Structures are given as structure tokens and as C-alpha cells.
Length: 377
Image 1 (cartoon, rainbow, N blue to C red):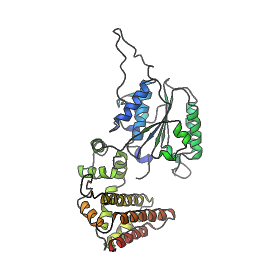
Image 2 (image 1 turned 120 degrees about the vertical axis):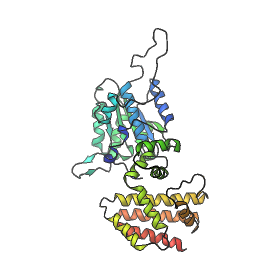
Image 3 (image 1 turned 30 degrees about the vertical axis):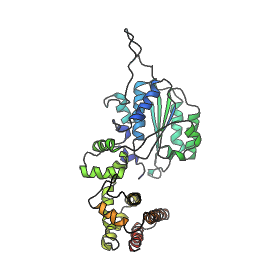
Image 4 (image 1 turned 45 degrees about the vertical axis):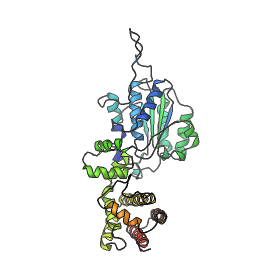
């Protein structure tokens, strides 16, 4: 869905999160690599946006900075010959000094690379620039402040421009001892092949419901159960996506969209204009962007379910009361193939409108006019 917002993530984000849901296998892989004493110097943590990649990266960073290299602590066999006891989890207690220092961005041996704030433009930069990566080069050129690891988290590596990527590649090619780079990537295919080849890849999958539900209970405790269930459907296994949508009013926007779609082929023009006016008053354009993404997402959901004859069946979870009946009615208008064509046209309309900065209200009216034609076929 929407991109990373450093300000919004600051209150709930990975730097502060003590719990990781649903990625036990990935955690075990990292523990095993650390315990072997041959920890790869670079990891590429991949998966859909919002599934917990950054949370895992910070969790591993805390573990490394709290424990140091395997074998560096006094864990040898005791008087009775017992084997050393190694950690069986990456978790670090919230009252641990390393946890609190990382949460406050105050640990000398952890550096994070993300889109920085442009003071002149008074906005967050669209890319990670070379100056951001040079800070890593400077830090990695010095001895670790606490004698253990130096860790760098790049979140997300996809945001690096060409100069930043080439600068990072130099570090990957000649990493200093006890330095670990954790690269978070939503779309690793877009990274330089030379960067991918120098990292060990760790792929995270969307969470199953058994892990997603408790994650949302913890992350969104102020919402009622029905709202969390709706966001769980929208999230598609990505708790971070659910949190962002909750903050952006995603459920309310989708409910308004479905209400107007349900009136087709004769929508309430006054309500449609009012909805467009409300989106137009948001100068940032964030509300319209979320609306457009939800519009595409819900049509794709309709196409997939209609093609597999799954509307209301196994694997279909209703977001709002009446959504199933609406989806069945729309599926009866035309074939899934025709709906797929409309989904593509919706995407083209939104992309073209954004590229030339068309009036948002007019774009909304155009979208519903297109759906109205589909209803009249």
C-alpha cells in the first residue's frame, strides 16, 4: 500500500517493537548463523511491504549488539564439562540497556540508513542519497565503540538512488571485521545484481491468521474487534500495512467507496461529489492516494474471487456487512476477464491522473463513470 512514513512509524515502528510474530523460521536461521561463528557480513531481508522485515532487522541488531560475536562471552564448559548455553531467541528484554539505547537512536554501534529529511525542501527525500551512505562508510572505518559488532540497517534498500547503491556496494565488497549490514527490500529484483550477490538472502512470507491476529491485537489495541478483522483482510498478512491503513483511515475510505459502488449504475451524484470534495481538500494528496490504492485492491480482490468462484466461500472474509452480496452482484455484471480489463483501466486512469496532476475530484468521477459503463453492458 502506501510508502514508509518515518514520522508515522516513529511511534510504533520496528525500533521500539519487542515482539516478532510469525517468523520463527527466519529467526532460527539468524541464530544458527550467529552461533556457527561464521556470520555472513550482509543479509538481504525480503518480502512484501509490512510483513515484519524491519522489525526482524532491529531485533537481530539488538541481539548482536547485546551478545557480541559467538564465543566472545565466557560461555565455555564448566567444571562438569557441560556444553555452553546459547540463546534460543533473538529477543532482548525491554529493560536491557541495548534495547533502550536503540529505541532512542542512541547506540554508537548501530547506524540506520533511510530516506532523510531535506531541510531546504522541508520534506522527506524521495530517495536514499549518497550522503546517507557515506555516514556508514565513516562509522565502519572506526573501531566499534563497545568492542563488539557494528551494525547497519538499510531501510529500505529499494529507496537508494544509483550513487547511494554504488557507495554501499563498496562496503559490501570490502566489509570490515565484525560489521553486519542488514538490507531490507520489498522488491529485490530492482537492486543491483552485485548487491544481491554479496548478501545472504532471507525471505519473509505474509503472516498466517494465527500470527496476524495477535499482532494486530498488540499493535492496534484501541480498535474494536470488527475493525481489526477488517484491517486483517486488507493487510493480507502484513501487520505493518494494517497499522498504516488504520492511521490513514483506510477502513472509512473503503466503506465509502463500496457504498457508492453499491449504488451503481445510478450512484447518488450529490454523495459522489461530496466524497470527491473531501478528497480534494486534502492538500497533501495522501487521502486520494490511499483511496486509489484501495480502489485497485478491491477490484483485484473481486477479480480473483470471481475467477475462482470463491465469493462468500473458503478463503473469503467479509470486510463489511453486505460486502459479499455486493461482490456477487458485481460479478454478475460481466466475466472476470472483463473485470480484469476494468481493473487495468482503473490503474491507468489513476497513474495518468497523478502524473499530470489532474483534479482529484474529476478523477474520481471518471472512475465511477467507467464502472457505470461496466454496469450497463
